[in-house]
Amino acid sequence: MYDVIIIGAGPAGITAGLYTQRGNLKTLIIHNGKTSLENANKIENYYGFENGITGKELYFQGIRQAQNIGIDVKNEEVIKIEMIEKSFKVKTTKNEYISKTIIIAMGTKKKTLQIDGVKQFEGRGISYCAICDGFFYRNKDVAVIGNGDYAISEVNDLLPVVNKITILTNGKTAPDIRSEKVEINNRTIKKIFGHEKVEKIEFDDGTDINVNGIFIAQGTADSTDIAKKIGLVLENNKIKGYKSTLTTPHPGPISYNKKITGNLKNSIIFFRFTTTFPEYSIILFKT
Image 1 (cartoon, helix red, strand yellow):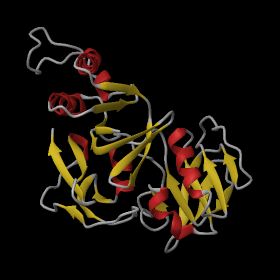
Image 2 (spheres, rainbow, N blue to C red; image 1 turned 60 degrees about the horizontal axis):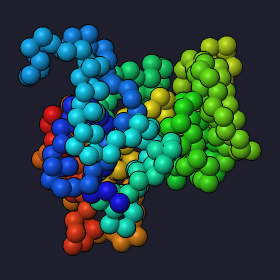
Image 3 (cartoon, rainbow, N blue to C red; image 1 turned 60 degrees about the vertical axis):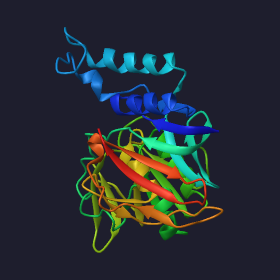
């Protein structure tokens, strides 16, 4: 059991970890080894580096600094956070960890899915959270776009609910998964069709399939993916509110400060259980 689990090892995550560890809180930082800082060849406007520093060097220096003061650091991909009795369970591709507090400092993906129809049908057949919206597709046929561990996690959440799942790799390497309810389609997606809701997916070769819903899970989960699973309502990557989509063994009042909103790209989200009763406090810190 950790006091704090921080997801993300960039400047925001490492800084948060330095403070929590110094505050005598048992801290774990989980990162997937990838950072947008690697795109910065030289950073010259960061305090303390008179000759500048590369983004990659800054990233790994921060990780070593965290390790040097006793913070546990794991290089693993986070695929899910679950609320359990008075704590949180963080699932990665390798392990599960329990913590009283979660800090999400993962940043957001700059690359979006460039497929005709995606924006049009968001909320009308296109979802980004299987655990949140899977219930609405009970005994129906759905597709999951993605081919990594995060996509497989979404598929596993959908398997007990839906009738059939088609994994759409969109021309990428097929994942290793075996189930009678799962088919894999490697063709490149051209367009998503429908009237009131999603009805059909067309491919570049002219073929198509009928589906009732589509779950987008390409690449790895970022802060927006995790935030949606927790229940935050987002609009253009900004927090707009909170909706209860999850249950706990001892549900209590859920607290969300609606005045604290901001863009997830430059923010971290803090989830906490109070010690007296199971209240979720969601606070946004600018970084």
